[in-house]
Image (cartoon, rainbow, N blue to C red; front, side, top):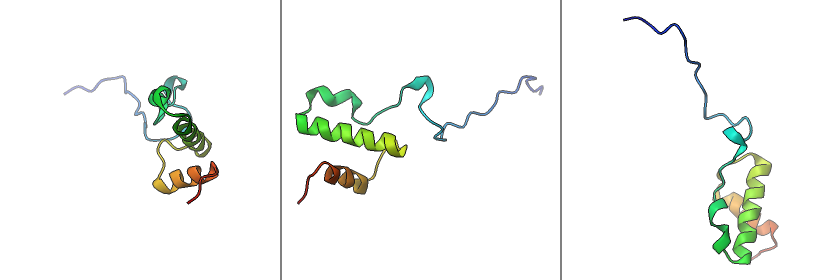
Length: 75
């Protein structure tokens, strides 16, 4: 069996080296904000800001709680 003379380089897609290809970063709540209440929109924007600041695509429930508290909510 003959091998292809042009080797295709392996592309590691799991690394976090910056924005997604094309400069568009996927966001957890980006497509659904127009129907949110002002409070929910503020929370979604704060979560996205947190994810951008920390280089995370998804965050844990503890991180969600941290974002909520940073907005001034308390029990």
